[in-house]
Image (cartoon, rainbow, N blue to C red):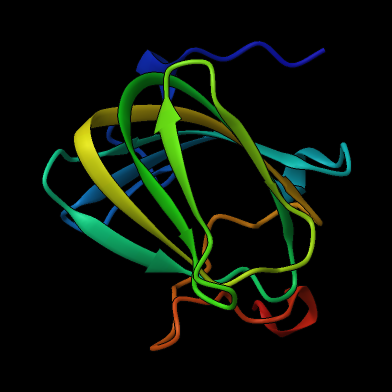
Length: 130
């Protein structure tokens, strides 16, 4: 059994930020459960592009609002508390955050917590993480 709080994670290597978003990585690959689980906060007024080329991500928005754009099709989806989206096709996407968002995110395969977004917004393949 694993029990953690976000207070336990705050200020540790599991607490990752780039200035417009912050990800508290509650469950990671080294927990050996087959997925990773994160609480992510995105600042109001920010626009972020992401691409999880090697991971499937499910996102549940619990606070805030904004707009999700599929950059491959141009399709747009308003987001608000209670919205869920699944990137099961590894879609390159943009999040415009109108009101600060707090999201609960699940990744498969799990991330290690050491990944860095490259210039396209993607993480490297899991085997390339040292």
